[in-house]
Length: 611
Ligand code: AGP
Image 1 (cartoon, rainbow, N blue to C red):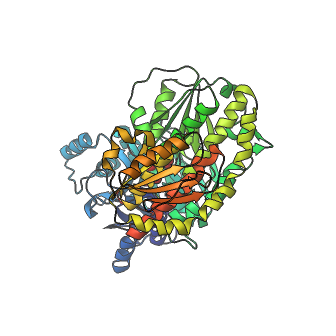
Image 2: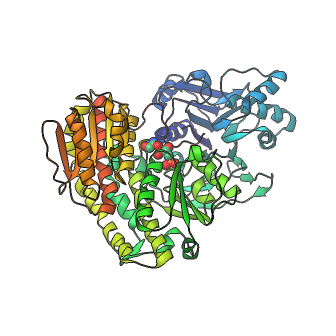
Image 3: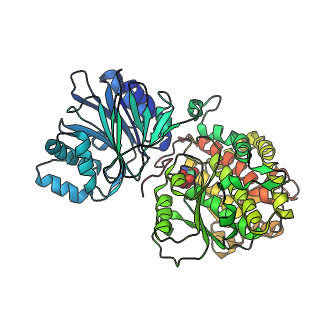
């Protein structure tokens, strides 16, 4: 989704901006642009449809540079991907603006600005920001005052960075709903929607809060809150490693991140277990009293994180008496629900910036509808973490590939950590909670072992490249894993993939099965294995091609229609995590063979900060 980088410096900034945009590429975008104040203090702009590399080439052919600049990667919401719609947008020679988010009342503002004589060169909602701030700039005489005035008229979500020839060496930025961060330098300062974009120039950051507007100069930063009061925001030093955005020996970030899972899991386990005991501090200080009161759990998330929540529900209800429901945030936020007593409201998000998930949390907080909110998140500085009462951080490291991999498996692990802590809070340690804690220690090594299947799965992927459709089947806690396997395949290989609980096949989807239909099944040992085998017999009898990821103890027999890929025997509670790995590898290799843009699949964005 859209990305912002800006700089106020005493050196040329075009290269810093282009490098920042490159680092934002993982978020997904369709065009890029940059605007600088040149040596004569004129506003210069360059934009290109396609990759940041196209913009960089354009700048080589027609160089522009200056010491104050803003740049943007755009993911189209209002108006097609086209140069005229790419940011920065300008208001004559008065100012340039880059914007993440959506101005919901842009049509009304467009009309109003039209009546003042402003014309529009794009189809975007962003252009109204440029003209409205320009209108106020003419009246107020200061970019900061103009932005403070204009923001009172915006409805929606935005992160903005604005520059104007009227005020050299200045950026004015604003945040409402979309993340925006100030990066601190010495005699220079930066702004960005993501710290990754600024890591080559600084590791000291100020995270703006909703409603903040800030003046960013060479030596001075002033932040005003929603009420227009001058406020201080803490400076945080980031330990995020710049190298996280390097591919190293890997061809794609997705493959790198799949192989990072043993480390990500080990890091997420670190300091959270001690001799069969879940350390309560993992979700915050003095939380046991709150967790002991929990009578219901509501999990809210989107996409892959939602699948993690679905698995969590199986686990929580299998080991406690706490009823648990799971819902996608985009539905939950608009649905009326009776308020429930002593409910723990759990949000799951890799980025912590997903607009729907944040809105669902806001809704429950406004209604005072839960005992407490708890986020499972991978980004410590994210909005979700800041807005939640308790947090359980996954320690996966930055995830660059749009298709979520290591974030998912660490979310599953976090749900198990939460489950163990809940059991301890409600009933004290039990044999089952102790066994869970012991089993979890095995995870990094088990995942390592399954990764050794990579060459086998690479070969298997060849059988999928000419397919247009596929089915994924699982039962119990493996059903959401089937959903996740299907999501991975469709999002990066563009093969239509559907997942079903295997017992549901006979109620309709079986009609799709013929010799052209690959059917992927997940078959660890457990209570439902024999049931699953019967479901697969039915597919087999209709000529379906079966690809079964099975436990070595499952006694699955291969034949000309049945490909069996054996996995090590694993404790039942760990199976969903372990069986995710081969499905990620399968999707990856199919996509590579099909030649798609694996890390940045078409139409998708890493961080979905708009509704
Ligand atoms: C997964 O591969 C996705 N690209 C997507 O479904 C993602 O999980 C979803 O948008 C939620 O994101 P979040 O975890 O950052 O909230």
